Length: 204
Image (cartoon, rainbow, N blue to C red; front, side, top):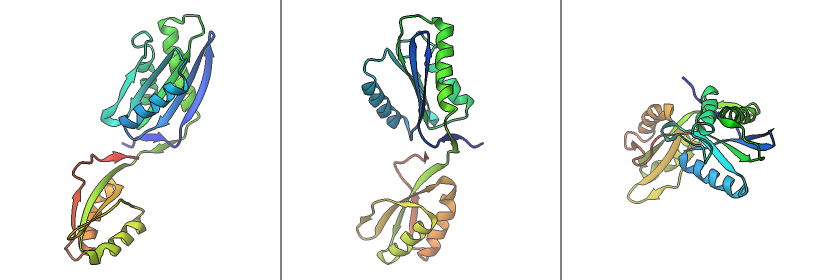
């Protein structure tokens, strides 16, 4: 089953009983990037009462009520992300308290409505898993391999040069088996192709 992310960040704002709720939904690669975005958001809204959030990013998901009563902010935001079948998305709602308490039910509705309003403005795109192959070839084959990668739109990282050339190549995970076979043909069986040792497949 396909999963989806957002083509670009979106935001919306709603006011409920004098409280201001600023909702943002932002595509992110992983939890580390999400935490950087949150830190910047908190810095930009240093006087906000709460910055509540939820993240769906494969095994790196999470959420926070950020001081609101338990279950009234992070969980509702997460459920909206799930309803939209999103992955690789950070959803955050910045609240400026207006002096009137909303109660637990009111808070759940407020956070749900705020992030739903932002997502209505977003374009969903299919999220394709990516993986990296480490390719080791003779110097004579480097240009051929680079041309092949360019023709397929694959990203070639910075190579290392020793007795042979080592090139990291990033591509859709579904292409790796065919790519390995093609590379062996291109290099007359002399090329060595292996999954990146320290990289989990990622998504984009």
